[in-house]
Length: 478
Image 1 (cartoon, helix red, strand yellow):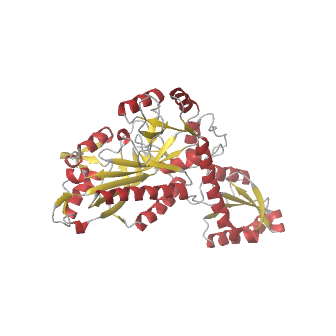
Image 2 (cartoon, one colour):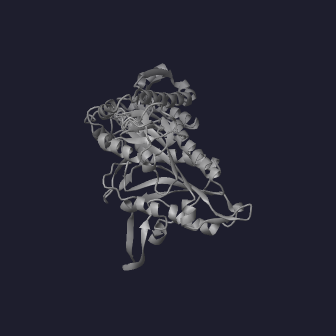
Image 3 (spheres, rainbow, N blue to C red):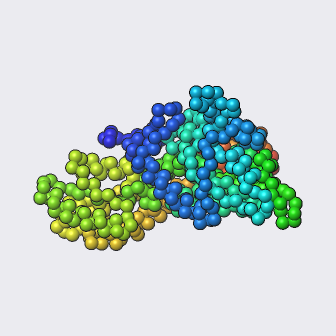
C-alpha cells in the first residue's frame, strides 16, 4: 500500500476518488477498454449490498430467473424507442465459430427485448399475471468515458421485469420497487436520496415514466442511484404479449423494469469518504471490526494474542465481521493506515498495557475518536456501536445534502452557484423540453427529478419566465 498522502477532496475530487479505489484495493481497470476487475474488498461491499437488496426483492413477491447474454438483433429492434435509445452503446457479435453469423447478436445492454419476447409465450390469460421476475447479471454498454464503478462498459446489476393486467398494478409495482431502492440506499448504504420522476428527455428508452432516486456526492454532484420504469403497454405491443382479460377480451400486458448497479459501490465511496480514504457503513463493510495487536517481543506477542484471539472469537460469535490482523511483516502504524483507507468502521488497538489493565482502545473510523473500553464488554456492546456509526454516517450525509440544496431566486444565481458550489437547485419549470435543453447547455446541469405528481412552483420558469407548471430539481451529475 502506498504511504504517499492522498489527494484531498477539495483540491482534486476525481483524483481522490481514483486513488481511494486503488489504495483500498477495491477495483482496477481490465485489459479491454472500459472493463473493470473488481477485487475482493470491492466485491464484498457489492455482495453485502446485493444480499440486502435481494432479500427485499424476494420479500415483495419476486423470484429470480436468468435470461441469456446474447439477443438477436431482430428482437432488439422491435421496440423503436428502445433500440434508438441504446443504439450508440450496443456491442454486436457478428462472427462465431470462425464464421459470419446469419443474424448479428447484441450483447445485452438491458434485457427487456428478450424478456418480453419470452413473456409472449408465458402469458395467455389474466390468470397468468402478474409475472414478477428479477435477475442478477452483467450487461455491456459501450461507454466512451469510464470511471471505475461509476461508469464502466461492463457492470453488474439486477434487473427486474414484471408484467401486469392493469396500468394501475404496473404503476404501483414501479413505485413499490423504487421504495425498495430507497430503503437499500438509505438504510444499508447510509446515502440519503430524493425520490421523484424523470423528465421525458431523461426517461429510459421505451418507458412511459421513469422514477428515480438521486443522491448527492461530497463534491456537490448528483448521482442517479437507481431507476424504476413504468413501461405502459409499449413492450407488450412490440412483442405481442397479449392476454384474455376477465371480460373475455384480449389486451396487451402492462410492464415495468427496474435496476440497481455496482455504481452504488462508487456512490458509497463518494458519499462518505474523507481525505484519509473510505468510511464504510457497517451494514456493507466487509470487515466491521479489526483487532490490531501491538507488541515488541515474543513474550508480549504471546500475552496479547492470548487475549486478542478470544476477543475475536467472541465478536464473531456475536455476528460481527471481525479480523485479527496478526501479520508479522507489517508494523502497527502500517496496519492502522491500511484499515483506515479501507474504511473499517472500528479498530481495536491491543497492547501489553491494555492486557494488563483489562481495557483496549477502540477507534471509530467515523471521526477518529478513541475510547478505552473494558475488554470483557467489547463484544456485547459492539452491535450497538456499529449501529450508531451507521446512523451517524447517514445523518452526516443528510446534513450535507440539506446544506447544499438551494432554492433558485434567479437564473444567474443558479448558473453561478451550480458551477461554484454544486448541489441541488430547486425552482419553477415551464415543462418545455427546449427550455430544459437550453438550461442544460448553458449550465451543464440537468433536471435530476420532478415530484411524483406535478407541483405548482408558485413562480415562473427559472429560465424563460413562462408560467411554471412543475417544480424541478437541477444539478450537475455523474
